[in-house]
Image (cartoon, rainbow, N blue to C red; front, side):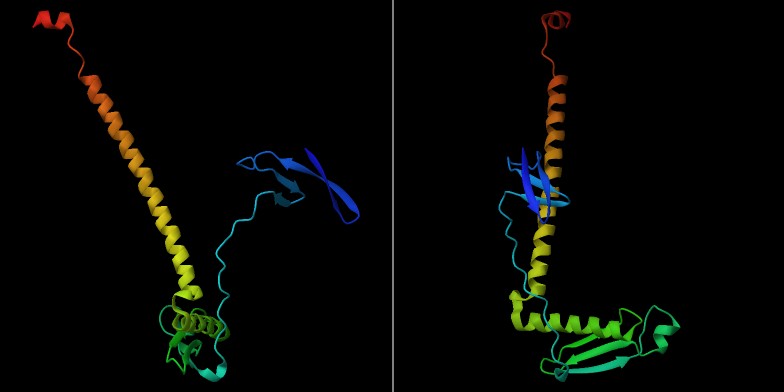
Length: 176
């Protein structure tokens, strides 16, 4: 089955892809795949929270600590943000760059304020719920797999036991 697809001045042919599963017909045209099945509905994620305005934040730069050597310990590259209305404190020392640490700290602070304000409707809560569902599903799949393996091993052992208990023939009865 060939379909004629027009795009701009040039016309190209799109070939039907035979293996698309469940009887659906899919089309492939130059790196772009088309499908006749309806799109899957994913749960709409809330947008990433915006950091609070700078008027609500106390910002200070601290000397770093921990691994990283003398450079980390000598420079004021660690960033500490305090959200005045809520009292949330965030300290970031992820990189050696003060600006990158500042950006990361503001993102973390925005996420923490979002969790405080929105609770279970916050982006962080929804993302953690989705990750928990995935890990639970993977664990369930693993348990199911090993349960089937154990059942197969038990059935194999049961068949071996039945083969060991052979019926007594007449020749064996007369010899005893």
